[in-house]
Picture 1 (tube, rainbow, N blue to C red):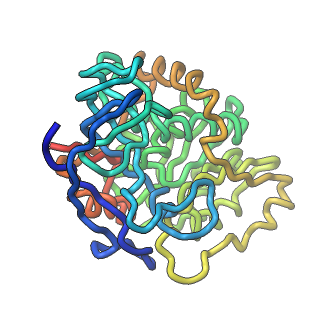
Picture 2 (cartoon, rainbow, N blue to C red):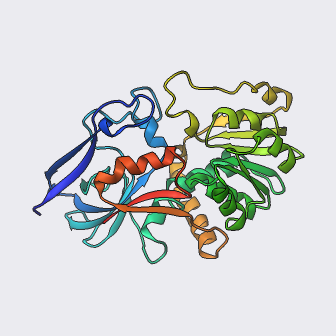
Picture 3 (cartoon, one colour):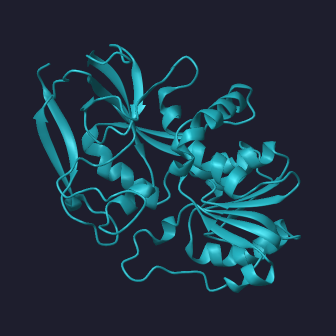
Length: 335
């Protein structure tokens, strides 16, 4: 196939906020699949807070994106040519294909999706890594029990919207922390949260006393910083704090702000545990089947923020995550 493959590559390591000059926009010929490979054209690109951590040259659960490399990203591609026995022309496939218009793959880590069961973008969100993260983080790491009080920060994001809804259908009281009245209205009005706290205008610690008077049994943290510190002061006995992310700290140029109220873990006999969803990879089919059932019968609503554009729009779209401009899963749909 002739044509141009437009790509986004990492030009330099960001310091603080990611800037346009941290990226290089490149063009290459469309690659040709070899034996046992397929060629896919990118239709949807996932944007996730974890991407910021992948840009730093420091130890993590994945190697950093190398300078000059195509930016790592999950995406949905349409198969255009194939010499792979499991993938046919016309198939829609989800995998880590990077921020580029075309990708060649040997099929490792790639999975066919069924657009008749859910929209392709949903396989990057509710039925993708965010959904898996919410499912295993809440039910396994958080060891959720019916009747408990759950508080989730970053509640209007891809993971937070799923955490709150799963907790509600498991019979728990759910309080979400989000930024802005519009997001809080979505949580309580559309997604069934019992209460929502606007961290931009409310005293979070005071609001948690009002909405979780008996304490927090499970705190699912996506933001870190002062919000985590406030939640630690409201833990119930034997509470579980699930560390999923810390988006408030990702662009920090100085030292990361850690919790000063950590002694609450001792006093309340609580535990705080971090996790990485990849540890549960063997159980993804189990989670996907249950999540798909909940979505299919309407007990979980899929919340997505689709941005239409081109590969060149990736840097600006990524910035939306850190400005809090998205509600639900942020996806770039290539037009």
